[in-house]
Amino acid sequence: MRKRTNRSDKRCEFWFNFWIIFPAILIFIFIFGAAIVLGILENKVIAMGRAGFIRNAAFRIGLGGLAAVIAGFCMKGILKRRKSVKAVLGHVFGIILCLLLAFFLIRPVVLDIPYLDHPEITYLASLEFDDDHTGDGPARYYLSGVGSGGSTHRFSLNEEIYKAGRELWFEDFDLRAKIAYLPHTDIVMSLQYLSPPDK
Image (cartoon, rainbow, N blue to C red; front, side, top):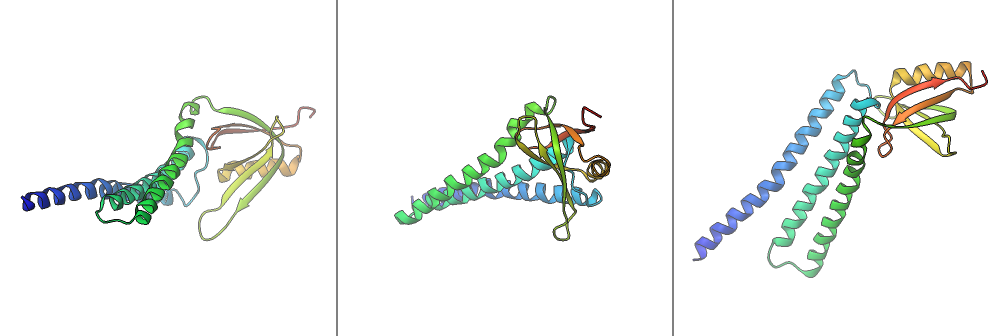
């Protein structure tokens, strides 16, 4: 009778481990493959359009999936016998924390899917152009400004659009921008530089 119980316990443990480790391996392969593809694209940061959304979604889903796998390992720790109350509470806290992290990472991606074909539009004034050359990675380019409602927005741009806008801005410091963007991830879908209305 004990042999049967031990076999069934081992079988349950194997399948439990399989359903935790297998997704972790898939997530790792997905992230590694995405990193290679992004590296091939001339070491540039793809920040705009559907490609920018896919890049952002891959990063968020990868981290969210990793958090879910860690929650699975915490669940496995709870199922082990002879655990102290502190250990069980620690594992429960870990599960809740990881699942909340996964939820808040993946939620903006899901909420922005309906906006892919109909992004929100804002008009920015008082434009500021900024770049970040931290480390050995590719440079990141940003545009910030004041929206029509008085709120400040900051968006990540591709290099070409950033440089074109910066040149126009040096010619006219009152330059404006019309931006179509996804409201939850702040991915710019399209951008048009505009002269002030009185010019």
